[in-house]
Image (cartoon, rainbow over all chains, first blue to last red; front, side, top):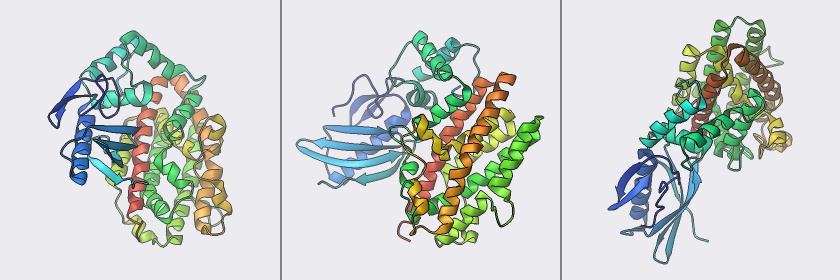
Length: 99
Length: 292
């Protein structure tokens, strides 16, 4: 999966030094909350799409809510989500209908 | 400023924050992300950024306003504020059910200030505030709390149901913070933490950079909106400019006199985090009424 190398895979922060494996890939996160949130997001997308792996997740927004596009080959799956800022649990996950 | 730990210098504060950020502590990392920068910088640069963050504004009151605007009325306003521009019945009911708990804590916090202060202007201010928010002055001037319950009734939710509903976890978490501060904090910190939140309904913030008002004032003239809803919204719209400005002036005055500026900033930032949680809980509760 394509992720940022020098910043948190979820929130783009350069602070912290937390490394965790997501889908067998070692990734940098600013803290364990972002790591858990990112993992929840990836697993939820895989569950809903049936994809075995993701090429990339484009993420816009902040802790109050994010709009994302998961990419797999030529396909894109768009969704909105919000995490619990203290635990990284998914609070909201809403697919965005394709136009 | 971050976790309540006091530091004599910005350099010492930077050193403390860097130590915790390096160990990926979520509280310190998130504080940096939200308030200072997401870009990693060294101790000297962070020290300068922290000092600028705390002292950029000309006064403590203007710093509180600017910080509030950035957190709730910036380029990405809080989702509850966006929802309140043209609110649905569900949004307003979520507001009623969660906010009544907030107002109950409000009175406890104001009472705590009265119990702890020896300044007459502060005592008078808080008494007036409790009357406006909770006590009311007869049928001609019902309290904000009463207007809130009437709004719920006008939207079909009996007050018995509102009063018997426990707060959602996020509101409860926020209430715990304010209750603890009311118990252990200095009265100037409590005032800043509580009255700074009244800025949410201060319509004059748009003149200082807010991207929108708390709600679209056209609602107040909309014949389709129940009168009880307009009465509630109008009360905050008209009262909270004076309320928040007067309180901020008192906070400014006494934080300086007691040398509490940094503690006040820390309490205020934590209160903004708690308020953010509570506003999210209003939206979460509102979803219970979406299909009702």
